[in-house]
Image 1 (spheres, rainbow over the protein chains, first blue to last red):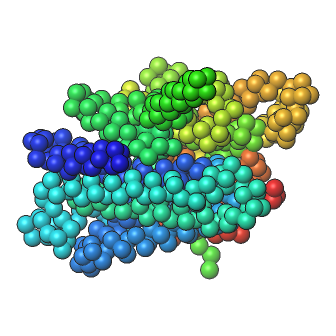
Image 2: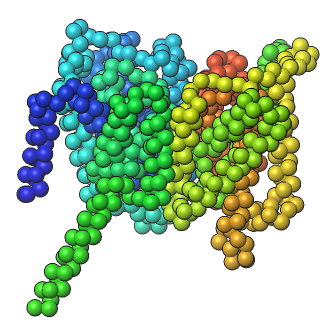
Image 3: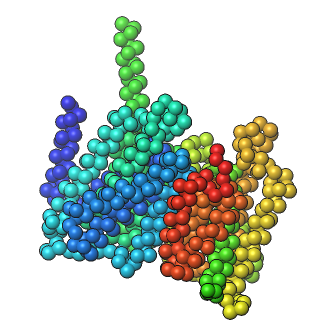
Length: 333
Length: 287
């Protein structure tokens, strides 16, 4: 009950944030953090079960480009475009996931196959430059004055903040649902030993494919949201190896085994990038990624459970010790 | 109908295949022996290219010496990659090692951007274009192909004839038993990493003749190298060799009929189909 109240208060505080006189720039950064947190959370759904995908950039790109292109060329409202784009990413997830899981492509192989996927989607966007704009990027057409529910375009940052907030909360909710489900135990078992899991009657391919589809569709939705918010997409930020690795990095930094780990990762990486940009300007291009890269290496060597993961582990150990102490003192009475 | 331009494209594709095969060879060697994928492999090539560029263009050192220095520098970096990053992670989940080298990719790429900026550089050396029967073949590519083949033969001889080479092959066959036989696996791993780095350096020498140098050049060779290795079967050197030529032909011919990006897209479609038919790689055995 107590937890519920805390969550409710936290949610109300978050919802009221735009009324607290937060400057537009900070609101923008917060929206970015929320959108990327959702995407990172989607990735961690797979990552925590040892399905390390370096291809999530592909799903971002497919989602964002499908919606924007349907809107510009066929004047199809995102209300129809988004389900179509999600369907497309689902199809892509099955296309890549099914052979991988069927033929037991795991670990390194899986990472490399998905890496190839993300690279090819960005190549495809480049190759279709006559309709996608290639590396120059793509801008969805503005509808009327800029705010329209029909076109899902909102000129007001506040509106987007609430949308992003709801999506982010939904992402955390899905993560929690997966965390308490039976499938989670199945997937844990599969990531430990596929043969053993299969021998006790688990459908290895089906289980893995299901979590991959959930993760891919969520990622595509995150990409769509990003596109609708920024009103500009390009293959370098939404597909390819760079963004795929950036996703992995943020999740590893935050912690992929805890619900808010990817969010913490997003807060750290995005605020670091923005902070460096404000502080140093564009004079030192690449400084943020230099620091990320170094941090990623150090994190994996010294803190593989991530920042939040490490904090919570420490907390739970303390709690366990306290419980043990009370149990011992009760026994001795 | 005989098309001379198509033949020219095929020959150029063959020559490109030599360099790709060399890249795949280094990656396969490291994977086969240490069971680690260096995601940053193409970035090591980039470092080699910058080393050669600065030694040759800025300090006026003769190109051959600069290339040898480039190979040495990348070999040392390969050694350090294992020493500093991989060896602390050897006991952990394999995917951690892959991600750590992913971090190194990020780091190298942006650190070089930070140091040298994003502009394109080249060593400003114009090599002649050879003409055979009306076809134009770049001398740089021919040289690259020949060097790649010589490099591969040298590696084969090293692995087959020397004591260290035998130890490397033995450890790639059974990692645990060889330690019991008294092989110092750490030493073998470090030697392998240095050789893998050296191969990346050799690839850098060949690429520096043909391409402009910029911090993101690794991204244009990295993914294709990984696809080749997976298609050939990770760790399978002969498979990687064959796959390199298949891929370079697909890219060259696809690029001839459509655009270069389409060559890559077609290559990937073949890759996906191959994953369905032979997931263990074209020459792999089912484990």
